[in-house]
Amino acid sequence: MTNLPINKLREKFPFLMQEDIKLSKYTACRVGGPADVLFTASSAVELAAIVSYLNKLKLDFFILGGGSNVLISDKGVRGIVILNRAKHIKFKVKTDPPTVWAESGSSLIHMARLSAERSLTGLEWAGGIPGTIGGAIYGNAGAHGGEISDILISTDVLLKNNKRVQWGAEELEFEYRGSKLQNMQRTVVLSASFKLAVGDIDTITQEMNDYLAVRRNTQPPGASMGSMFKNPPGDYAGRLIDASGLKGIRIGDVEVSPKHGNFFINYGNATGQDVSELIDFVKKNVLEKFGVSLELEVKMIGDW
Ligand code: EPU
Image (cartoon, rainbow, N blue to C red):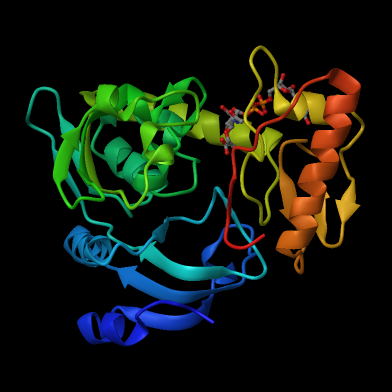
């Protein structure tokens, strides 16, 4: 049973709210039980309206973007989830530097491709990274030597006291796969702007395609959460898992990918419980073999 003021919420947002909605279809690994309440925000304005109302009522919420870096429990979320579908993207190509502004639910891959089409360089590394701009900022997404923090100009953030702040990279305290946002409650990135540079369209496209090819060669297709663990200092989670002989280990319908040890693949009917058990198994074995305690990159959400 939920303690949420359901009637109040329904009255305030009759068209944006659904109840008891299974979250598996909104996650990249296709795992996750129901949320008591699911809001869908189709613009940054809607997102701000929902969040500021929830903040007023002091109600916690979880923002689900692309669903690529989360593991939601089978029991689901006894509370509120907001599906961020605010996807507007605007370029300023004639300014120096050229910039792109995006609502936080925009796809990072989409923004990278639109930039390439406009001969704008700076996002080649992002052409294959699933997830939203908000998620990318929250976890300082990166690949192939690039990170979202490198190109960020500013974010429009709504804090839990409902103040709006414009935070740059310094205020966000970026680190490897992390930002200050990960320690903040009831706070949401509404939109962000990024600096790019004018480049040569063929070079940009080539570089992006090369990174995609590397990805295809080293990372498995299929339903997964992306990298499960952060790379420990001076080493690689994938290498450690591989060298521990754990590739191909399977619990229920989830398997440590034989292609890349830091990817877990859902072959169709994996449960959150299966994934969580595989996480523990892998962590235990890598710790025993190498004395390294792997830290999850994926966030575990809901009741465990
Ligand atoms: N390796 C193995 N066995 C494996 C997998 C990897 O020995 O099964 C070795 C590789 O040979 C290589 C090293 O481990 O020497 C690193 O592997 P890889 O080059 O595949 O990169 P990664 O560190 O595993 C990181 C990011 C990825 C990103 C790639 C490409 C992390 C945790 N992961 O992977 O990001 O796509 O680099 O730049 O930082 C993500 O964060 O979700 C993600 C996919």
